Image (cartoon, one colour):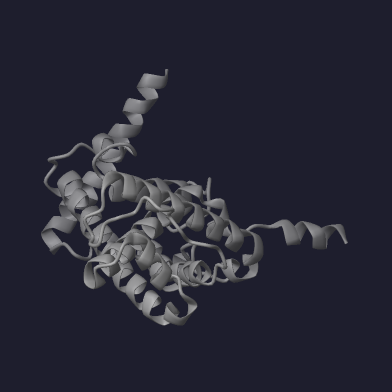
Length: 250
């Protein structure tokens, strides 16, 4: 019986990876914000009116379609940002690796994704080791579950009476109120998934399988000559960074 109880307590890999969940959280709040602003602009609605329409159960399929459309744009943007930093760090050497890895710096996708990859490669926290694996799980598995959970949430979505805009050009106050409401909704949805959907989460291909995973996937968008430069510099720059960190700590 003790063994069964211990197995029941084993959390899915995704639930243990807070860096990944933070990325998902930020992405989802942004997608929801942009969905509501799109409705406001298209139909000349107030934020409250767009919230009422978007979260109406009768409009679930339309809302999902809009969220998936914006998800594809967000994923592409992050892939482009990652590859841009990748080229500037490993090929053109315009940005130092240390600068690009700063989680509070200007290269969000590169720094946060690399943090996930580092943790996964060191086996400190389970997760994907490469951009392709991370994107596949996000786009095809986790986000569909989260989107469905959000739109099935039976909570009252309202921003109060201060909202006046009838287009996507919201005031700072309006943005703050709406973002806070959406943040609470996303937080609760992720918590609910972690608490009730562990078996489903465990089946998601979140952790790279070595025999099926191409460790050089991140290089495929670059021509062969640049791939050679990148491979040399990846090893060189990471060794230099580790040596520098070791010297600083000693």
